Image (tube, rainbow, N blue to C red; front, side):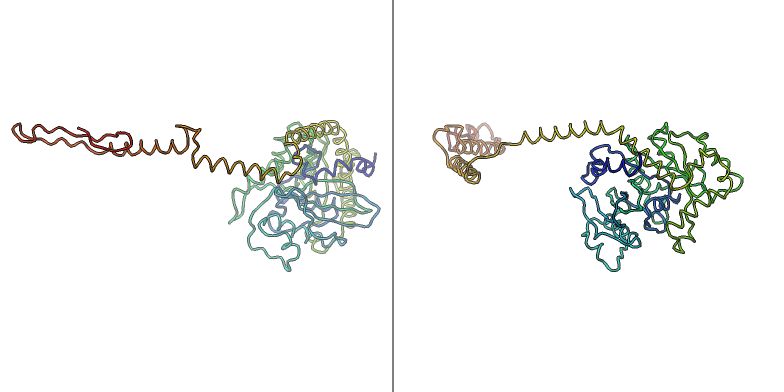
Length: 432
């Protein structure tokens, strides 16, 4: 079954994300995970056909969802913001018909995500957009990029910030853990396919994203590893990476893939997407050792092979998860209905008049209680205040010291008897 057909059949499932159901349910998705500078952005650009913001250091600072859909219409792109504090998505600007405008639109959307106290419109229309210091280094709020057109492959995935090994001078050490927690919040879900990006120019043991993937998927059931930068491999170590592609050295259920992206000089010269794909095909067909590999391995080389396999694997995951998702939706629907049933019944007649009547009765009762009611007896409000006042006065009076003057026996005051003040009813009178 082609990817175009299965995406059409599962459109209702893929459209559940904008309604924040992705945070409430375990919907099937592909999460792109990798350490810094492993070519993750280049891989996404080769799959989606758009250019992501590029800067020194970490480029992606919040999740970026790419939803690709093949249609009979001309190419177009829409950008939305999905933030936790808003129940619905926020459309970020008007639809884009020029691919060259996508990079700047995503850059502005990311700035809006990282500076939530400012109105979104400030980032859409500001000319030029200059932010000296962002409010947040990273954010879990999401940018949704929706691309449609005749030459677009049907696929959806989420690009996550690159795993940080260390921070530069002036950076925040807390960013390392924040990014790790953000990535883990996606890949710990059982229905999340982990597209693990591994660079061939760095020792695989030193790439932290691989360790996170192994932590949540120790058996390699839902991790799809892909090698990047094969043109950077030193001549003496090709065999190590070839053994990975053969799925012998480190086993994964869906096997290893390998892609080759444009180098920095080609990017600076403005190489087109189509030309980059042709260069990739020529590299694997005419460069050793890739050109001499077995056919079953060669079928895993290139962006086109990766995209096709991702679509098939995601389709199978959707098929497996659909019955469980259906039951989960029914349970949540019933729970919502039960909660609605617990709400008070609708008032009949004049609700405003009923409220005013209740308030009037309450006001009357309070006024009578303060004024005093004969039927309350000794437990009335005024009676209690009066009794407590007398008890308080007695307690204060009893704090006074009892003076006992010393006199001689023959003193005229020798018969003096100490007088003590006591309460007699409501009067404070001395008694002998």
